[in-house]
Length: 408
Ligand code: GCO
Ligand code: MG
Image (cartoon, rainbow, N blue to C red; front, side, top):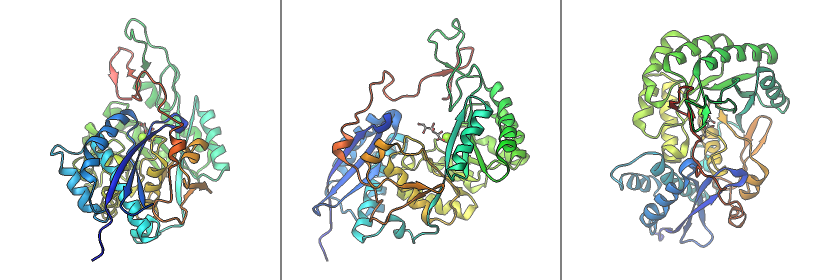
């Protein structure tokens, strides 16, 4: 039997082209020139992930057979005894995805081939249109439609408040002495049905519209909002509830047919399996590196297929191009693909990550290179260190008018 190719070294690459903190793992092998890349980006706690890789996973990985991805995944997952969580899952994802990249390079094929090949030529994406009012959102959405995008997520500013997707608002000094961002849910839930009424009139019936609640409202207002939006036929309504409140999905299901997308904050199968099994959501939106990487995500996609749930992997700016490529390869190969979120790549990001997927005709397109098809220029990556930030990458605080901290 041929001698196995083994893991020789693991490098953690921290880079912030476009100002967003990204974490990428490079696994080097015993075969000269053969390496793989994986995404381990948890932007708010990037250094914690880097430590988990450098101090724990790297020594664990060195010397192991690069071909045994599943075995590596299982062994690494339980090696901490207390497992899961965004830090350890992202660290694991970095290595797991790098091993998929290596396996596909050894096979001389793009990763999607290892999953059975393409179900589609390219991956339709949704882009983000945000504005201060409904007119501005409609204008931005129309500009995207003119560029060929057919799925658009629409977020609107709420006067005086700091909404997800737009800032603003002045807190009451006596109640909020730190003068943090402010948020109240009622004005928002009243404004959103009006936004979509305007958008349907302005943009017509053909475009697919999406919206992200970002778990910012009390659950019963979420139930009301899902019903109030039913007439505007959203493609999906996202994160209506926090992971802590998923018991409310059943209530929404009994009352309306607004399609529901959930999951970017999930880290553990115990959170997402019951929702899928009971058909309480329509789109699974996990952040692939946050659930442990590609190995876990492909199993999740297959489980969703049996339950009629479609995929919509999380694809914001704080996913590296390696992570976007992982999303795309899975999207290409699964029959239950729903849609792919995409924060359009900045020029600097494209330069740091040669092979970054092309975006045209409203879709992300793969290249035919073996592996993910995306590389990292380490010299250039080093020219984009993490920006100075008093919050060290964390979310700024958001508070109610009475000063209570709420979810961002
Ligand atoms: C989305 C998300 C993101 C997250 C961000 C957190 O649906 O795109 O909600 O914008 O807020 O990825 O870091
Ligand atoms: Mg979201």
